Length: 259
Image (cartoon, rainbow, N blue to C red; front, top):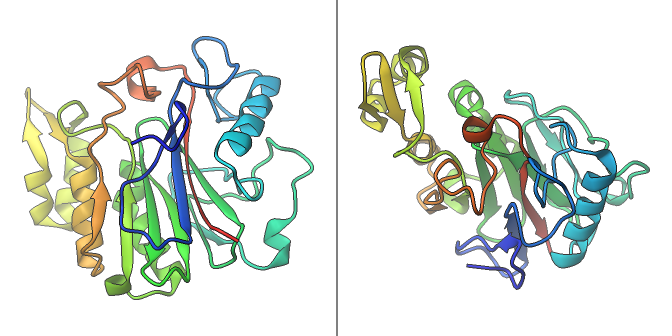
């Protein structure tokens, strides 16, 4: 479902009215040239800085963002930053500079825009049912296995039963092939995770990354989980995919509490 613009997706989830969210598509806006064509929001993937800055300015306009997104330097880890208060609403001097090193962010301050960049990894948004807090997490397989979703929910300070989640476009279960080493990491931690892997050829498996995330969210008491159907690998017209293309751009998934 579009958010009033061809370059945006509107998450379909039962979030409170004051919670706003969008996820970007690779085209429909933007000035980046191939292989970053056209709406690349990532500043660390090799695109021209001026193009990324122009794309970020365009994003703010078409999504009607109340402030500049709090971009992160994502590390495939479990660190979570909290952006609250007036300081979190200050405009950055450099639109390309990250606000800190982390793979998730949380806020309870209206107007603060949280942002996650992906191109196969899971973008996961969270919202308290009463609209008191939101969060955004970057969950590739490493971060997911290490506990980034658990760390994000803990940082929200909202019980799992009072939290909902949305899983954005990512490498899908029918296309994301991994080796034994990746499967072993998940199965060693939880034998039930084996059901999220389907054998393909010797030593290789199709991995249901969104399904693994759903299992972990369920264990946290989060029963209302939406999304997870869009596959970045199999839809080059709409999504960037690092695994498919190697060099390319990044989509952004954003959430904010409307002021």
